[in-house]
Length: 324
Ligand code: G3H
Ligand code: 13P
Ligand code: ZN
Image (cartoon, rainbow, N blue to C red; front, side):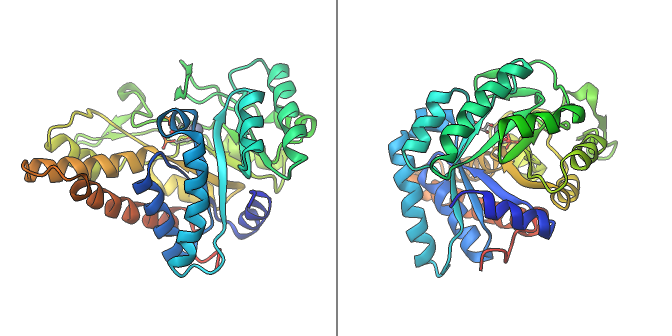
């Protein structure tokens, strides 16, 4: 399904739909299991990196298989959307529309304003012919957005959102309020340090910008990218089992919970799943150096991801029970 109905209900209900990236079978199984067990709608996201890694055709049919798997797990009416994450050209978005994706993102956030509008509008005009919904982005997130590197974040300008949404016809809008991609969301100099644990304490998100955007576009679906929380227990397991992730820091979950209750109705999480996977794999391999059957370390990694996704759904997004 596309995102239209999912978002309308989420905005009304004061919760957010999880948007989880997947690149392999174990991630997809974990996402579906977590959503089936909690009856949460879900957006399965495919990035350009995922397309290169796993092959777009394979990913598309894996997502189709996931719907059947969800039913096998006893989820009678699965609500699953297959979404292109960070599409950067019209051609890429078109190919995903033609190929059966139910939603696409056109990320023109690195372009000058008018060029972002023109590109987004072109994608919307094409996608809407096939009832495929379109996410756009206004404002620039810090960090790495696929191949787009933004040195500094530029918060979304609330005074632009009405013009942008009206002229493009986009169905949802990703905004920049201080989140960013990856496991290093803030530089140490942007944070304070907890004297007890020595861990970084990040600065708060710009909720004033979010509120302004909501005032300008009441009821319009807003999206947050870069919303991993970088759980420190995973960072610690990784670092004590041969890894090296110094000063990895994410967005505190209480801030995401607050955002989910507002017009934010899609929250993107990828890095946390990578951390859960890596922590579990490192632990098994460190404790059982003789192990060489991938199922013996990918299995525990999958179990850990199920736990993580359920936690996000129930404790952060509030989307449990919304797709009975
Ligand atoms: O927004 C970026 C997503 O986390 C996807 O990352 O390009 O490494 O697949 P990726
Ligand atoms: P994280 O890196 O914070 O998980 O963000 C993922 C994302 O925004 C995918 O589009
Ligand atoms: Zn993103």
